[in-house]
Image (cartoon, rainbow, N blue to C red; front, side):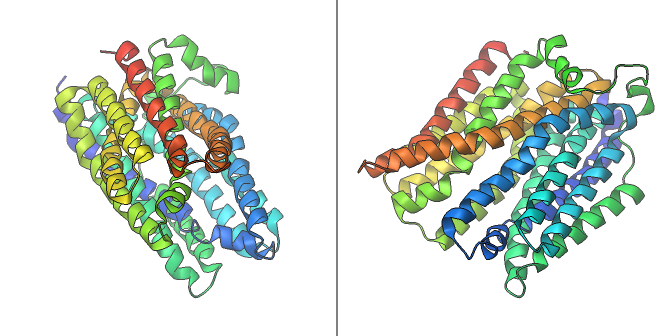
Length: 406
């Protein structure tokens, strides 16, 4: 059947889903610049304790996600995507309201746990893309949606930093308001992407963690792709969590220089995800786009980790951004490996894997970085975590080459 018959409807739904995920990214990220300052205000601005508490808050969000994401995804296969989107936006809004009103750190911790238990809008949106976009449009659609998420995450800190100039807690109120707008948008303007005919039967086993992960056992083509996903996220974490420390230590970057770097990288990431990823998948196929993206990211990170001066670091970083074509290609291959009634369960597993790396990777890479810059070692050792990311990307390319569906 000609998929072009579905293109206008699919593109309209992808545009609506992109708006929701933009609001999701904006609501979450508006507090990024001020959360550490709010934490520090409860600790007499002790830098060591502030850093520890910021890490614990991240773990308090990620740990519930590891368990809940697959369960919420399975429930969305049965009841539709919109209830999960509504629950997630409500959880984000409640967390930010607790943050805004917090009299102590325990309110912040409770907010992160609430958000982690209910967080699922991004998984529901990705499942919604698989529900509506035809296979030959899927990589392009995933790229466009990912670009919208990047745009929200880029705009949020800029807005939050500006608001915090007047009042430290105002970004949390604004983020909560954005979450409410997102919830109202889901209720009033967003159609349900999952057709009733594709929902799982009520007579199937109840959603349990084991049942959700059993998908990896019953779909052999999915297992190597899950390995590539894990390697990709670990590679991302090796740079994302450490590059601010690395550039300050090795190149002496100021906060302004790093801010410019983040803005440029995010803007290029939006362009790559929105336009380059789809074109690469159409010309090369998803498998080769995945292999090429992982390889390109590996070479870029190799240059970043070895660059002795800033002028050599920038080209490596720009090459690494091109590796963003990995995510849409991988999402497409994974969505095609399972049936239409299991897309939510699949996206729940994807979120669970990503959350697991958010718990493990910061602990591992921060410890490795602390070792690398200690003991009077050369500044060149500071790039060791990014070099580990390069190796992980190369390993992901090799696994994709050997096992990804042709």
